[in-house]
Image 1 (cartoon, rainbow, N blue to C red):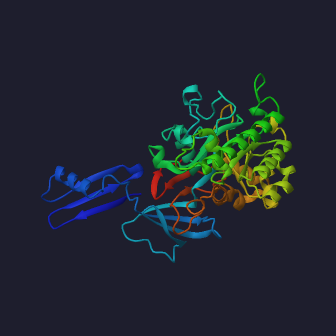
Image 2 (cartoon, rainbow, N blue to C red):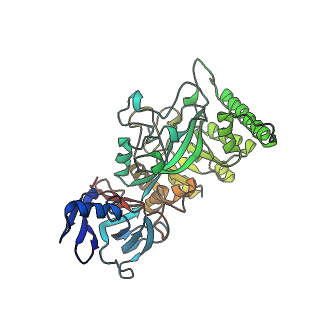
Image 3 (tube, helix red, strand yellow):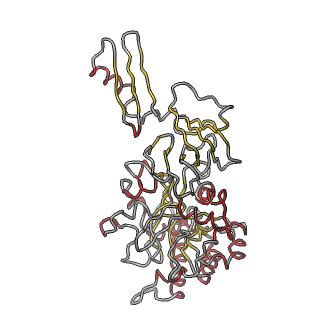
Length: 436
């Protein structure tokens, strides 16, 4: 599929013909030579913009907007990176000259509610493993924005399956491992990819954060250390608020990071798998009043009444996570049971200390769909429901006018293993047009 941008005058015509993956050809005619044409193109900003990024139409045999019923023979119009209109082809005319992408199935770009992509590298060697610093059990001051590598090959890998937004950052495995960010899965710099920083502070109430020869060594010590640090953070906040103009408040990056959670500016995301650890996370949130996200939560199905009463969302473990250790009671049906109970739930790609450290949420949701969640709720768990939990539903998660134009186009049912992701669009740019 090709688009064309034309610049014309009485004496010459300049055309930019755009093909797949922004492979473009500059064409000129009449009296102007190529250097002059090139200068004109640069002056008008044609060459520095992605091909046809400003004007794009997407047609699908079925368009799953996640804002209502699926639309058969649907059309999505995209202008300047935003969704301009969506509806049936008979109701929406595609303007002349717009680039058109076609596929059997169109969905919103997938939203990964919890990942370490961009900090976890494809080579699985120390030089590209920035997701966890083992030097101290508690480091809330570590910023994911300082560790995220936008050029990491694993980002392209997950994007090739339709993932356009990821909540990523420091992994579980330390009492407090650091902060997280929300990014779009494109951009040569973290600033270009960034949606929100920080997004959350990541903590762990799980034996994976215990240390045999150091502290914390028990569940009781983990809770005591967290409570003590949160109390110090609260006292630090009070001192800074009371400091006068003549008495500059001292800085403490660690306490300031926890202060963001105590003020409600960022959630405290706590990884907890055993029911007793989930109960401890709920108790901690009740004591200090912070916004809690339950991460992984393998045994959440035995704590549903308590989780529902607390109004806490679950960033559920990958469906195919290895059921060993503290995940030995894992169930493929947990997503369906939580959704049936009315608990906000989204399926994550997660993190494992062993390969594959970065999973693909498309496949994890597919298994949940086949184990009680069903197609619509499974797709919601990696699109609009994930966006709502992350607080970015005004930009991502559904195909609606005014939202970012993030779409995934598939050759068939996205949850069918033989289907292929044909195109990926992020903020109106076709960032992938080679089928995966």
